[in-house]
Amino acid sequence: MTFFDSLGLIQYPIWLVLILMLVQIVRATIDLFRPGAPAASLRIHSILVLGALAACLGVLGSLIGAWMVADLVSQVNEVSSSLIWSGIQVTMGSSVVGFVILGFASVSWLALQYAAARRQTAV
Image: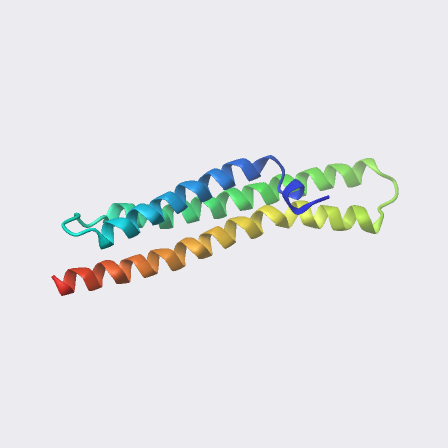
């Protein structure tokens, strides 16, 4: 099982949130460096909201993965180590991706907040 397979169906909304977040980061960064552009505080805050949404989707994916693994284990009389490791991948993969996106969103949000504050004090 590859890492992307372990994310299950929840990976598509997570990737969509990541793309939306990256678009907002690029738009907010362009607004900071474009002369005469209004402050885009809502756009900057939406980055953090999208990161939190990715983390929530990751937790939801982990819960779905845990339910799937528990169902598989209940159907099988013997449990092999490969089944356990694939279960761990399914259970933790989406949470890891969701919280990595949240971490990236948090760092981006802080950097953009700092840059926006520096821009306002310079003007």
